Length: 510
Image 1 (cartoon, rainbow, N blue to C red):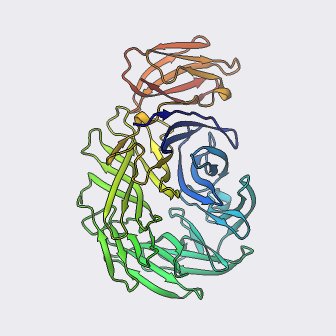
Image 2 (cartoon, rainbow, N blue to C red):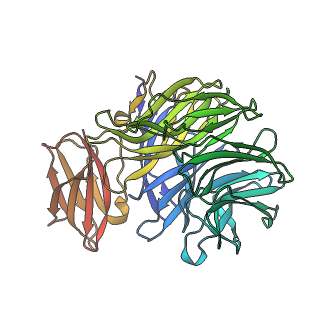
Image 3 (tube, rainbow, N blue to C red):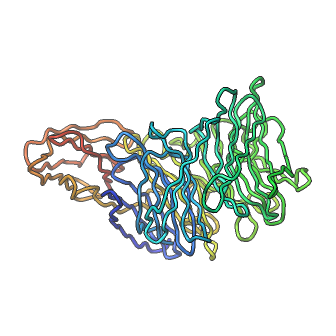
């Protein structure tokens, strides 16, 4: 194994949010980072490279406020946070970040959830140099009510910015896909809708293909018969449908992520009837015939690979990201971050899943949502990971692997991350005056309170499974806990101050 270079960095986030970052760097420049923003649920949704700079979008809960936030952060190639902003009242899972190289700004698309402006698409123009919001634009239509259960997408097509999502026609039945074509000044040029059945019609992928055609990947259900179909439509600059492909009936509403390959065929995730919730790829020729398909051999609920994004690599290979289940493994793997790589001919080259194990009945859950490929072949991926069964539940996952999906050389399918997350940093110590030392710890923990106007009055200790182990009433400015009999693993300290519950800190016994 390579020698490890351990680094822990505290970064101040806009709105006084503080990150806890667990870092491990390897000599071959691969790493794992788990990032916790103020003990709040969060995860990274998109990774964008623009002008040799890297940006992520993320979902955060907004501290103690009763709404959710989206966030945008700039990070370095090594995954270090540089700067970030939070955008309140946004629906999580409903965002898209694009780079406008004509105007040199970022365009961030989502849906507002604040009650007074609900059911409206909104997009922001953002200065990439400092992530300052330049302007915001709202899009609404009196005939449509927007459905906030669907991911919004955006892309540039000729002189239009196309923003698409899921809408419900007022007075009608079922959902329809709504596509707004915006002029360069962001005013609405054309409204184009698709609806295939009386049931639900959802869009999950949108892009301009290598032939200059605007391409949409949908799935829709039949209102009268329990079945789903995937559909791919391509339209020309005159907004005419020039290619329309429909899948056979499928039993599971797996999202038809995919892309047009550089060799002209289209790749789409498409399960067969008896292969539910599994990463099964189909390559479709331009004449609509099947070029190849790859089906995993385990059509059972206890082992599956669920896709969240599919992308083409520089050499024409295909990378799938998502989560992995293997419940026969002890402890059970439930939705762990996952990647697999195929050749352009549909041959599976490797698959990798990444998890932490702190002694609970199941290992950490999570997902990989997006990735980019560096010029040297390394894979930089972002998503979420969950450690234990107590708040904040999910943290942002950033990892960079080699071209074979390995963080350490010669890895296998299952990759345990415990040994790679070996340095922690105190969360919000300056904010509420609580210090924990040492961390990691062995036979004792010292917890001290420094604020006279908001004293520490109670401390609870949970294991990684969320089981309450100890509760202490604090009678002085500090408390020393004997941990000789504690098994090695991850623990959570819950702080109660005079004013109210304050937060959690993760500690690791070695």
